[in-house]
Length: 155
Image 1 (cartoon, rainbow, N blue to C red):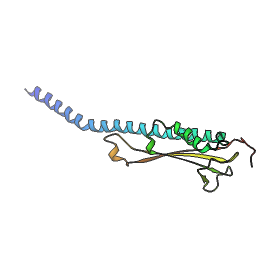
Image 2: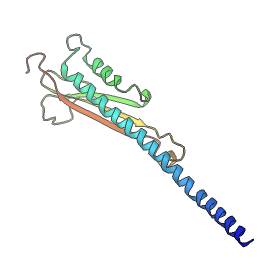
Image 3: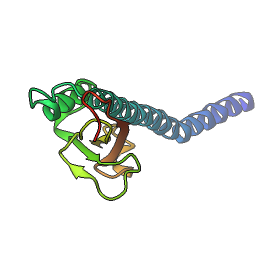
């Protein structure tokens, strides 16, 4: 009889320990999933900005007058896996490679000038137990700067 009581106490203790540990373990798993998804989104934003800056440096579309739209389209091509409503793309340039000052918005620049493509993605956490602990939107930023190739003589 005493032996059965010890077994039932151990079984009860195991149930209590499981009840205490399981929610913590579940939250940890959800945090890892949320973190992995956020890192994936950030890397995607960085890579898309790099793709846009590489395209900007080539000067393609300058003769047709579609260069800015082409740069934005090349950047968007790298962002297809993200929610398009939460993405902001900006392009700006500087007349010198030191990037002094604020730059010229919505201008990819002329040959031998510095061009920048920046992407901001408002990441929205989605996991049920972790998202209440985080802000509603987390801005993930990525940008890249490249010196434009001399597709025409530089000034």
